[in-house]
Image 1 (cartoon, rainbow over the protein chains, first blue to last red):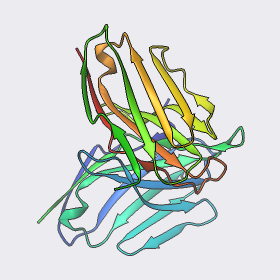
Image 2 (image 1 turned 180 degrees about the vertical axis):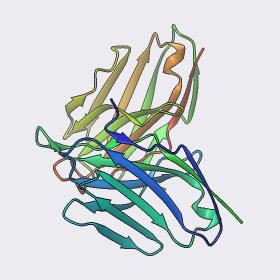
Image 3 (image 1 turned 45 degrees about the vertical axis):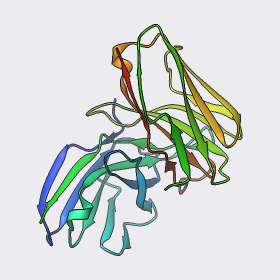
Image 4 (image 1 turned 60 degrees about the vertical axis):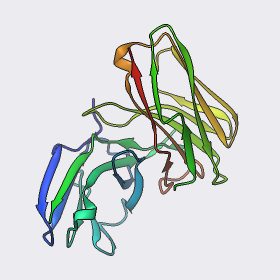
Length: 114
Length: 115
């Protein structure tokens, strides 16, 4: 049973437009959410995160929105650039036995066309 | 360069072989992780070590055996694997496991093919 779901395996966007990547979760104990970005032949790298006490966190072109009642978060990239083409993983964590160990989604492959 | 290195980067092995994957972190972190990434599946957590003690084992088959001799090194010993074990194996480290805000730093992964 997947606790973190990224239902869109891929997304194609034109350069300069907005990219919106979505993530849903089922575990109401999750209280911290992270996005990672992965290029081919590299490991995932941390991109941006948000605590459950917030509904928005912004870092440059990247903004994460959290809707706790819907158990949904999204990552907005504006404007999208070809270098943003990568796989984006959503992850969520909550205290379990005193440890925070994130659960990851399947990832969404973003392609930004020049 | 994330400060986490993995060797080898690619590995082909037969089902009767024994091999080991190595991970080293140069970040002074106290927690290390093994993940498995198969095509079209979520990143699957295999093992977590915090301060060299195993804190989580997600019911991984015994043909995978982790070893954490110190906080900077993590091994994954492989024996009698199956073709379905072919995947990308990722190592990660973090400062600890006690906060939700812990960011994980991943190595580049070992691409494993079991024939």
